Image (cartoon, rainbow, N blue to C red; front, top):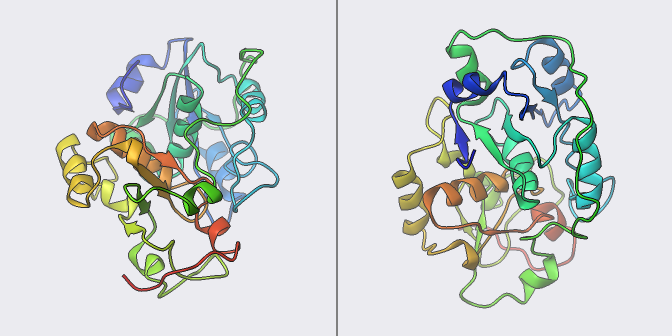
Length: 276
């Protein structure tokens, strides 16, 4: 499976394949514990549940959702039956806003992973059955040796001294970028020099990814020419992964991720801009 997106029909064809793992990545900011309840109430058959807070985030580090080490992440995925020998499909119910974080982490470590286009809504719209309860998968093997950190990550210090040709993209909603509102972090605004491309614009009204051409036009019109000259961030390094997915789909290549994102920057004493 080399595609970055999988359709509902494509996933149905793979559900009985023992080499395919499905991961439910739903999450609610205001009620994090709701995700596991919703999973137990109904999920794509064979899917396991990955918690953003417990499985995709370290206990401490820069930002609200710091990255775990690759080894810690691999250990969590191993217990969920997810490993590099299986094809992995991740989904949520927000157009991939949270599933893209798991997709990015998996693919950064060389795992063959894709996002379910349209997520759980598309599955329901196809009138396909849901499973309830939980799954108990067999433990998956990971290599004994993994990198010390995820590749493709930019730290705050590197961002401060970035070259002029590097485009920094803020994936949050426009009002948060402009500093008009800040419902989560202690300081409003954005990184000086960053441009605003809200991740939600990557999606159609039914929460599917826009066409390759539409995605490419969106980034190119904003002045982005390639992923290796781009850094993406959001509030805490989660929804910015949606831009990594969208840029790869568009053929522009994988941008760098500022994993600490605004929650790290705004508490560091670095300069802050407001307005557009």
